[in-house]
Image (cartoon, rainbow over all chains, first blue to last red; front, side, top):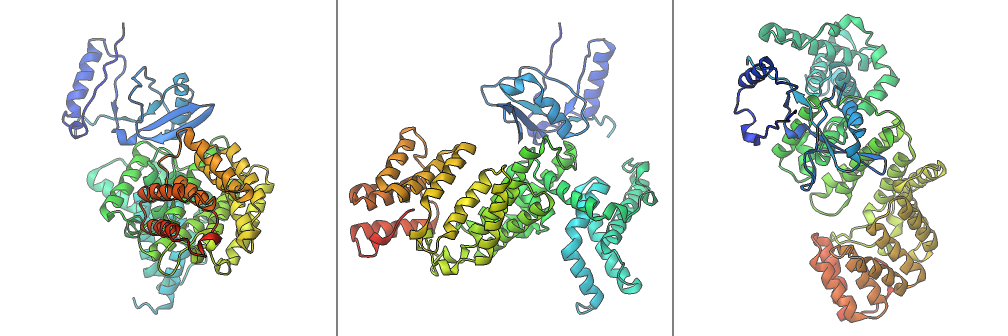
Length: 112
Length: 426
């Protein structure tokens, strides 16, 4: 069985935990053989939301999931740039029904 | 250096005509807005030092791009030596590319388009798109933009800083969209330009001067787009802006009050702008791919064509609204169409269309709905209905000149003078 562990932080606490600690946690999970994938994310200001309605792609700034919408899945993709990522996100089938938030991944800086 | 120095004047002239092009190319070459802006300033500083001594180069643009790029790479190398940051890779060797080649007409015009599309990227917030476009594409200062939008300068500066950070962190590419992406992306660009225009055209607030500057900046942007990308909707938007702008002098009285289209002194309309706008409308319409902007411009052109309000071709206008509704169904356009129908077929026909919109629960708190109903009731002689509709419209008005106008109309109802009957549509 796989589980997705989602990390939530208020904006003022985004850097409350040092990257060093997060990297150590990931390394430990990897050693125990339970790690599938983990990434830190850039703040929500960097997000774009992709929807497809009537075959037409719409892109808006920010995470604008409706309050009724719940997190239903995730795709971790490799893309050249945001436009490339948006085009890939638009092909994710639920983009037709709900929305897909595209958020860049951030590299941990464990030794700063 | 004294301002009368001829070389200094040359540099100032080149700054005015070339700085936005040079910036657009430097962003491509250096891959970062802030680095490119600093490089642009360094390049012009170098020009002020070197051109008086060595003479003005034969291709100032190529010289500036080359100097800016060199300064940026030099600065990055120096930083790297101090912080040992691995920012600059091997591909930044200056001698590798020919400066004339990457500043030829075609790549420079492409760079300007890249800059516009990046500033108007839909992943940026709409107000950030506007601020960034005015700052980077038009070259307005942060203070000028803040004044025009009646926003504190630090707020606006912060908005621009965040937008640039997002371009960097989310890796928004410096690209002209592919043909498949172009229609949707152009829509965003045109919306930004039209928003800038309306901000300068609406009689909301701010000094008259900054407002006019904002509108002419939007028209300049519209022209640039038409030059770079003569798509029908770009032509349509430029036409629409010119046709509205042509009425600027006539649409406000000396006391700052609103003068409605039918009451405007048509001799004060700017004929040059009308002619240019009408020609552009024709070009857009004959393309067969005209959209909402071209159709709205066509409506404005029909008004511009009428020597007196009575000569307005309302049948043509209703037909254009029909097309517009097909392309872009919206209750606001339905309302405008209803007013045109009232002019063609009489007030009762217009009223029943407006009441139909209200019955669907739409536009109930929209000031123009009630102002239009008031006007049509007045023309039908239904004074009591007219009064309550005016009162509703006044309650919904946020702008002072508009409130004064509606209150004047309401007062005229109570005391119907001989001039009141001559007035027509809203």
